[in-house]
Image (spheres, rainbow, N blue to C red):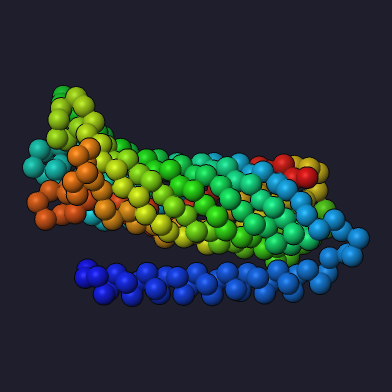
Length: 240
């Protein structure tokens, strides 16, 4: 992919994100009409969640397939992993939430059927900033929401493929986005229990070794981890 194509993709992504944010803002304004004038304008909630993500990982899985074939071993593709998150939300008129949080993704696979096992680890830390809007409030039952996050991710990819009995580590970072829908209870004050389902667009397309040199899976195949895909969380929150 040349620089012109990359620049166009970044511009297109930013344009889509701007449209999503503007749409959420408009929904929040429309929703706020139904809020009683006596409502306190600001609120705070802290949300924790555990769930799973489904990853694309095309480049990495092609590399794993080549390694498995050459060594006559079994290596499962990395297609997903456990996700966990913690997030703070500042609520405006109980309709629009400004959010900031931390996520961690796990992804791993190990060789089977060999005494000299191979391991591949692809954990990532993500930091998010975004917004969530209440689309439908059913009193004493549930809130139905939509949201969007921008995310900044740091990954440390590790494997003992290069040096036996020791994980060689490669570091990379990049930006991405998340869009999601959420349903959470509103009748167990101050606890909220919910479910979140969304899509993450996140590709970490450049890694370096401990000397700062660009890393490759093998000759001609640039090291690249693609966490894009559907995710879900089971959430619990405390709201004041």
